[in-house]
Image (cartoon, rainbow, N blue to C red; front, side, top):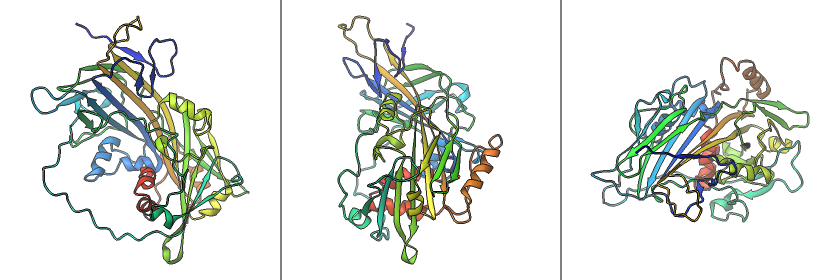
Length: 428
C-alpha cells in the first residue's frame, strides 16, 4: 500500500492541522520524531567546520564538512527518537539521502552505547583560578547605551554561585524534542562513519528514514541550505560601530551578540563585556539555536529578535569603550522550517488520530568575526571582504585570536554555559 503524508507549514493558515515549533495538535503522541538541523556558517564560524581532530572535533568536522575553509561551510545534525524498542537485534536506523547531498546512499543513525559497569572515571584536573573583575551587560542597537546600562556583575560572586536574579531568563525556548532522555530508543548523526557534509551539498529531494525501532519515514524537502552571511563594520565619530550585513531572502529574523574584554593586571582578563542586539535584555536560551518561524515571529514582535527586513545594527559606543582591545561578534539568521506528519489528520476532528511519525527540518545561517584586535583595521578589513564577495565569502582569519582567555574564563565561572555559546564562533 502506498503511503501518503501531509506536509504542514508552520506559518500556513487554514490547513486544519497546526504544528507550532515541534508540537502538533493531536490526540496521541507519535511513535517516532525526527529532527534535522541544517546550517550555513561563514567567517570565524565557517572555519570551525573545516577543522579536523579527534573526539568532539571529529564530530564537528563531519557535521560541518571540509574542503575550502575560506568558503561558507554547511552543517547537518540528525536525531531520531522512538517509543519502540529495536526488533530483531541491536538498534539500527539509516537516513537515505538524495544524490545531491553527496553523502552516499545513506548515513547511519547510531545509538550511543552505555558505558560498561564500573567505577566512574576521575574528573580531569584543571588548574583553575577563581576569576576576578566584572561582567558589564549591555543590550539593544543604538549609537549610545540607554540610561541604566551597563548592568555590572561582580565576576567573583558569580563564580561563588551568587548569580543575580533576572540575569538568565527562559523567554527564548530551546526547541528540542528528540534526545536520548526523551526517547526509548535514540539514534543520531554525525558519528564515526567517516562521512561529512560538503560545502556544495544539497538537501533538496526525496528522503527516507528507516530502521528497526521506528516507522519508515518518507518526505520530500524543497528548502536547501541558507545563503552565507557577510558583514561590514563602519566606526562612527561617536565611538559606536555600524554593523551591516547582506539580508537573506529566507531569513525570519536576526540576532547579534558580542563578547569582549580588556586585560587586567598581570595579563589576566579584567572586565568582561557582553552585549546583545535584543531590546528586551535576552542573551541566552535558544537564541544560539535553531528556532521555528513561529517562535521567531513572536520574538520579533517583542523586539527580542531583529525583524527579517533588518540589515544593520549599531553597536553602542559604550560597548567599544568598555572593551577597546577585543570584541567577538556573532550574527545569526534564523530560517525556514519544513514539517511532515503521517498519517494525515482525519477530516472529522472527533475521529481518533494517532500520528505514527513527525519529521521537522530547520535552517539557520551564522557568521562571526573579531573587532578591536591590535593591528586589525575593522573597517578596512570589512571593505576588502565586500570587494571580494564573488571570490571569497569568508572574512580573513586573524593570526592571533585571543579567545582562549575570554572563553575559558566565562566557561569556568559559569559552568560552561556562556563559553559554549561563544565557542561556536571559533576559527576561520
